[in-house]
Image (cartoon, rainbow, N blue to C red):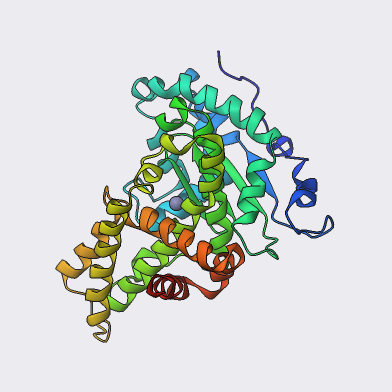
Length: 332
Ligand SMILES: [Zn+2]
């Protein structure tokens, strides 16, 4: 029923075609070093084996995977509501209670097959990742397939997709689009490391976080936009439906700017921001997905006025420069 043979690290899936992919990049030289993505599905395989067998030792194997370290780093940095004491405790929480988690096993098996097959064989999506990065970016990325954690997440140099997420079960192409999003994050974060939530207290720090989230999520959402558009894949994600609704985007922009102005007004106060201001900022992470939608819109507006290279150059310039570039474009 499940893939029984667990693959060790030496059998990591390697996308051999990626090394050649630079040859197809517009304007790129074939010998130009470029971002390489390595796929690693071991944690998803072990998780499915655990769901099938309930064998306790598998939890130790799961906790020892590089994917587990990636998830723990992510959970600790962003204060996710999961056990954060150890990789084993975190991983155990994702696959228990077994009976309940089994409901996602069938879909996860299909996601695993797609990840190891079509996604691994297709280099067109990694070309989209590169198009959304500075042309001289060479940082390697490992993309893990996991089970039960968010939909997809990223840390500097690593990214993951959750094989158990129902969005992927509805349409396997969503794995590919999300792979573009998360791998773009993974390289972006090597230029602009994510702030630790532990260190965000003052209004100035909240303002910096809002600007960071806008560029981070906006640029990754923008990165997958062309590919979705070309393939008729915009309707699979609410973000891209909203992005075609000008009135909605204007509303989200106003929401962002109001919060940003409030934070800026208190930015000279070094103490912790007042709880209402903090709540206003954290509220931007709600269902409106302001950072993703307004951020992607901002990236595309900059691209339309200044070209794609100007957008990718802003990765090195940073979040404040990204916002300022958008505001300058808007003023024209
Ligand atoms: Zn994201």
